Image (cartoon, rainbow, N blue to C red):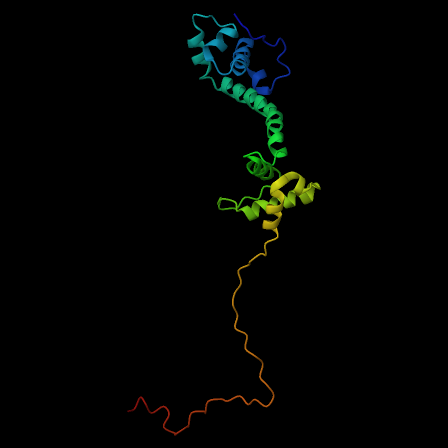
Length: 199
């Protein structure tokens, strides 16, 4: 009944798969990942009876050992998709006129040079441009080649003067020669100080 060829040697698999007590359980996990998540079909493909495949699959999915093995196999498949994702992203990065070109650049930069603001606010255009230029500086890439027609606009944005917040401090001019500092007159002593309590 199986249209999926089951491995004959499970040694190449991870520790969770190898820890399963039977080859049929390993077969279920393998078929479930390979067939795209069809439970009953995976049980039948692994050698469980067609009549009881649905109940067997349900029972297996409540076994923590099966769930651990599924997570292990799924993560392995997911990691393998990284190459396909990079291949799909490459044409977008190479086409500055693509509508998602800047989003693709940001996505790559976010992984290569993570620098998101701590409070998770939207990254400003200036911050993104600065990260892009830092990336080009570190890798030796030419920003003009990477950005195409957008390069001039982006580089102009990067060349904007930086406005920093500053504290205003009043500067008092130094005293000029001949200037005499006036001091208020000292209080006149009358000899009656301290008698306020008596009065």
